[in-house]
Figure 1 (tube, one colour):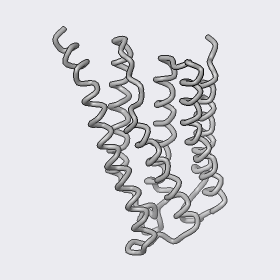
Figure 2: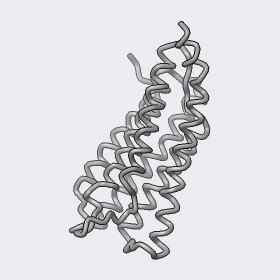
Figure 3: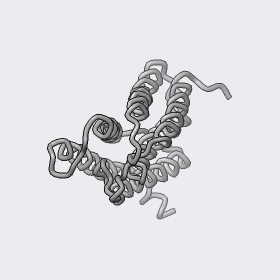
Length: 203
């Protein structure tokens, strides 16, 4: 099967995500290396930016496909969820166990839970022959999550995030904004899938 240009861009984003994870996998807050984080930020921004590019070409060339509707959000989730998992993990913890990003495990669980549920709804919808493309709130969620990841990486690389300081408060602002819009987007997708779920439950 020939893969069209938008899906090729999406697959390239997946490759960038893998390289990004490899880079972050070498980082440890106990022996910080700013270069790794700077390279990681660049890779992440490039990967996140191509999310707009593949959608643009898909619409411009009338190449919106079922594969693209599934593959594009899947790669987005791999990139963003993987980033949040690593940022909330031990690699970004001080010797006393404090995570310098300000992320909490439950926040990552909320993000992951939303993505898994929406992925399931999308797969079920497509299996019923009903298109389940991304909503505007979903795209906004992706961009806010992406900005938050970049902000946290830059804050750790070029600052000393200590609770109570202005920088830490800015980090918290982005984190909470991400959690809130993630929850809001989940509600939007549940409303969108409600009728389909009700119809199939009576079959």
